[in-house]
Image (cartoon, rainbow, N blue to C red):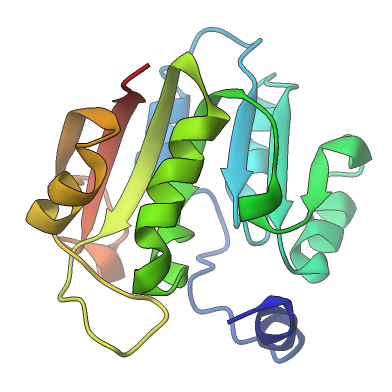
Length: 192
């Protein structure tokens, strides 16, 4: 599950996680944000629907990161005015920066389960002291099959609680129909 793996998935059109628009729970969260100066990261952003939505709402400091080039090219074509310098073609674990908000959507579940503790540490390091990690985590049994790899509320609480104060981790009430009752909306703050 390296760069070549994801490049191949995009080349084959094997992108079942892409619903074609910003996920409803995340879109409704974005609609509540008032500070347009937030520096926002969307890692593993795929075709960047959430980034395009944020940009359309006046958020100019949105950074999209993906290890595969195709989704970044797609976003640049769909939103030609999106700053090219904010399209980050690199490995998430090599990123050095700080953000006010990181939006999680189908990135965590795409990582091998043994990388999850590394993910938590990296998210902690990438967030400013008053930053937030917000988004969706899948709620179905964790198996060897994936991606997507599953998990549940108890597993996530155990995983994140050492570095984050979890404000919200509950079933998303506004998921799209195929994901209804299978997504948890999460909002957490780094313990800095």
